[in-house]
Image (cartoon, rainbow over all chains, first blue to last red; front, top):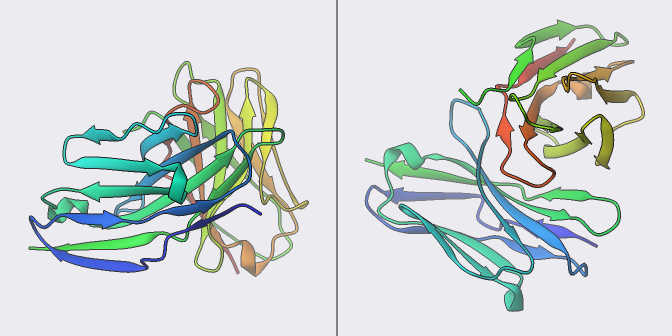
Length: 115
Length: 112
């Protein structure tokens, strides 16, 4: 069975702290994608990153970085020097692309960055 | 502004009714995705179309159907509505099939 677990329901940090959001996935498929999305308080959804199962390179985009480790089935997201504007719900998703496509979302992590 | 438009923004209807949600993708994007977000079920993928053809199907009820037209806009039809169908319905588009997705502002459906 495929599954995405975001064990951290809510995290609160003080501005300028670093924070890591965990995402653990389960699948036996060898071909898949992992996504992160952001949903700020305004409600819109914003795509952050896509990573395919054959690319384990970590990625950095400004203050955001992602650590993909197939050995632990994790795709963690780190925000460095957090800012109040980072306050949002963050979703991790697993997309299986072998055979019939399947999309599995985590339950989300609510990040509150306090000034 | 993502370039993806959804209409209407809000929809209030009664149980048993049928509604149609519309999505216009970004210019040039061939894929359209539909998602449902509710307090009970969280964020769920419903269906994806690529260049007019259904490409992936998620937790979409039989009472729901969708299509993508030749001009690439998409419609999500929800029928025999139940209270539990109340949710935010997002549409997204992407150039290909698993590229970066651009989301519309959503349609908030309230079933009374």
